[in-house]
Length: 194
Image: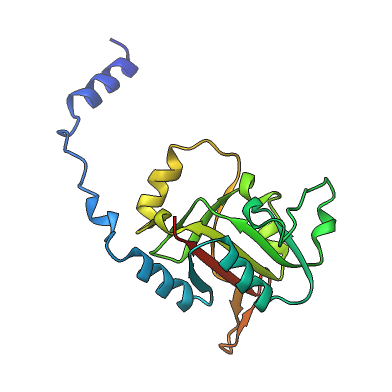
């Protein structure tokens, strides 16, 4: 028996006893109050949530809130009020977007985030380069925690995705909070009744 075989045999003989994995169901969260929790957390991090019954209601809110500037929309259900944008290869054409409108796969109550993949963004830079971001997500698609969120996205096939939570913000040592420092100045999430 070689030295290598002796070492491997000793390691095999001295394996610890198997133990069951811990129960992680405690991290699944409470599904009873996910809508209220989501609204509370999103508001706390500087975002705004609207519970809406349809796309006409979303259009009314957006038209009242954003009266100037370039609006770029990827949500086909909001057409013709907000023209659906066709992206070209030149991402520099997005430099002057005042309002970007996208949809999300789901929202996370624990941290106020939404999960968006590139198929919903149009371009990876789109939700981050705009001045204001509006996101449409079905109210039935709010999950309680990131543990549940990762279970959902773990079984999906996508190239690029991002959790987006609230407007861009940064603070310096003088405790001065700045919104929109390196991304959207506001995030408006429309929780759509389905």
